[in-house]
Length: 427
Image (cartoon, rainbow, N blue to C red; front, side):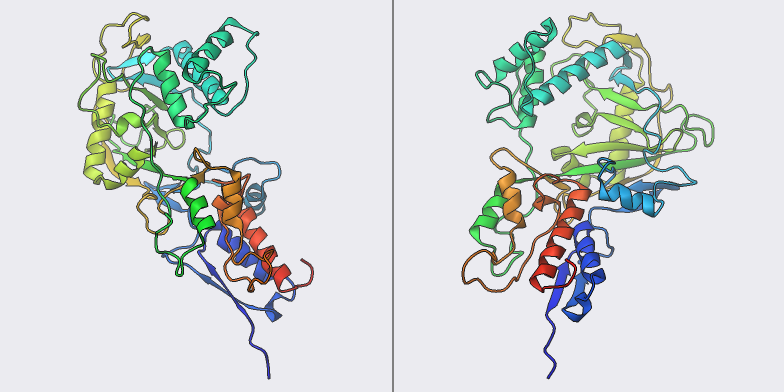
């Protein structure tokens, strides 16, 4: 009598699942050891990798970048299948070679020197928040920065302490502008301990790790320009790589009709030079808000915002004013920008994802990522039953969480675990 082969069922045909399936399927002698099945709950494979088309252009609704070249399996695969080559341009392929134009509502184009100083401050704050100590003796500018950071987190020795990185940055920028406002915390989405996804439920050490880790939402908004927005069919060269600077709530120059969710994005730009498709990014609460809006509401909100940037500029303000826009009086475009259609991602409310990618939240650590990666039951425990559930995905990789290659590595890890479990040759 022939013994029945064990069956391995991979749930989810994303990067981790497909990588694991490929390694299991192509390993020598594996076909004699077990049956293999991949189950996907959605209408496509790829998970949070989702290449689509919009306005005649190829776009990415999910994963967009290859993070790193040296040692990156994703970059190696892309080279092998020639996916980095194309006769047609695609999203971000030229890296925005033109200098960005930073414009504030009211039509002021900010001078690069002002933008650079704020960008430098933000980078220094981010380094401090990540625990990168700054030498305090090198320059007066660094000394002033350290005094600013110490005012927010005294006696910390570098780092935001118990504040989240986002909260620290918000407080630091408010202190910088000498106006501390109410702290705002963005809540992530994802799988909670009582989601009902697992029956019987996961053990407490798993659910507690899930509860501590963060799972944020990032969405992309694509807008197709009407071909007649500037009076010339098919000519989109006038729309810049636009960085938007919004006035503070107490500024007299603040435009009340700009929706709050537009004030939370930083840029709007063609996906490549002279493209008729524009892209803007949204994260956190504004990303979730975007998912609830109709196409008409989005077009109206974006159009209203751009109109405020192309309106007749006010008289240039003194650089010491809280409502400062230190630069030239220049508009984005004299005519109202018109859009033909929009397309947005909806990762936050997609029941198969409930978010975009994981992050180490305040109160969590790399140990929680390792905990998510542990199989059930744990093979190291005495008297345990055979392996039943294994876990893969970017949120289970301690050092490369939130990335596509992290998901890839996790798929290889769990496939190797199974091959070793079934004593396959060549593992």
